[in-house]
Image 1: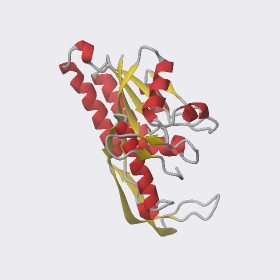
Image 2: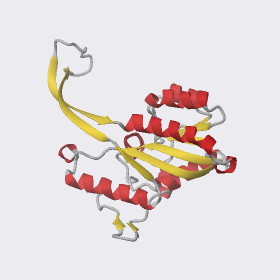
Image 3: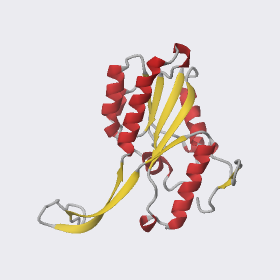
Image 4: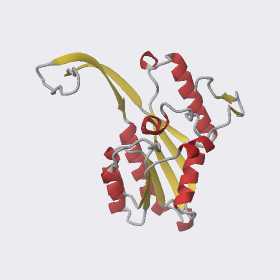
Length: 229
């Protein structure tokens, strides 16, 4: 069963990789491993990664964080991953003040903040999944992708999965939650309801065993794992 994977990069990083030594993740290899464990008939062939560029002013390491992200995106491209970039917006806003546990939110007690939001990623993933499903009927049966895997815990994706299940009932849907073992998280039931199967957590051993090499050769400049990555 030919398979296409759609990865929410922001969700993957903060749900699975942040505060670990495994950020130089060989994502296609890890997902292929998980999908094959789920069912050996699944054949992962298409990998699509959706993210937004780091804002250096807000990054821990400034421009070095941007360079690290660019290196990782180059590594993904070198392994035939399709990249779709969204954007971040940073705007002045107001929010209820938080003075500690027990503080009740109030419109009368607010303060000025900078509001950082990732834009376009969710919509891009939803449209890309739906368009891929819609195009398959124009291909010979043996060439069709009929299995879609979403890598995200974002319940905003549930309506897109529901639409695909309703409009293309022969399509098979899987969900891999980017949740690391040892961290208790709420199971997104609306995603589970739309999936034929779901992997709820990823082990540290799996992360350790699926890392890119420190040096990735390319036809141009080799890709080097950042020292602090």
